[in-house]
Image (tube, rainbow, N blue to C red; front, side):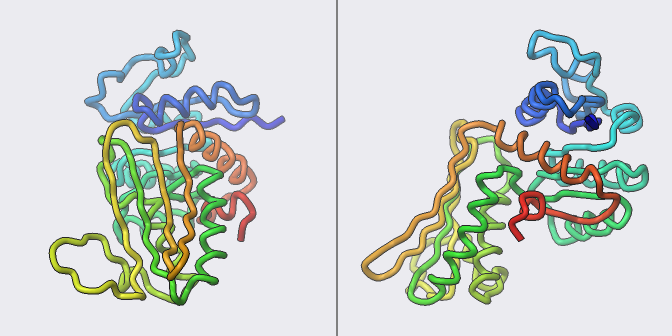
Length: 268
């Protein structure tokens, strides 16, 4: 059995800790490195110390040290940090699984360019359930393209810094493509005051932030006399960790290329 050598970014954060725990529990993966920002209090400590056990992997801010033995980097941090990691990984042939959200067009272009040097899975949500939901939304949207108003409602914890969530935006993009629209033209991200009647071609977004909500997404297709709701609710970050490891296994025999979770799960 081939053992995948994986490093994680944002190692002392909530997602980083979940990744560390999941990698250690998987028979075909080993944790070889842990990165965090230089100001993080956990720098220099064992990455699994929070579990009451020592892995021998210390959290570092030095890319050369944290990635020295890694074949893969799983990154759920911030765009600026991920892009720094991306440049290093591309030049050193380290494959990446990117779950970071909030990239602008230039950031997405940088990821696409890096995929010419190394293999990358880039998805705003690594959950298997969410990505199956994306496929269901594509199918549903084709049937509800006319006569149904489309609204996307998402809720996350109070610490999330971008809105709408990357997952909500991906849902909007999947739906818009399925019905032949451009999300940049039909997306409505705020409503206030006298807005007038709803444009039937629009795709609306509503954002909720509060407490410790891991991630809830609902797409509402509202017609006359009926409404259809397709929802996904996350109760634990472990779903993202499991999806990330599936992505790493998918990349094991790839050298270059840009992929997403639809590719990983064979849903194309």
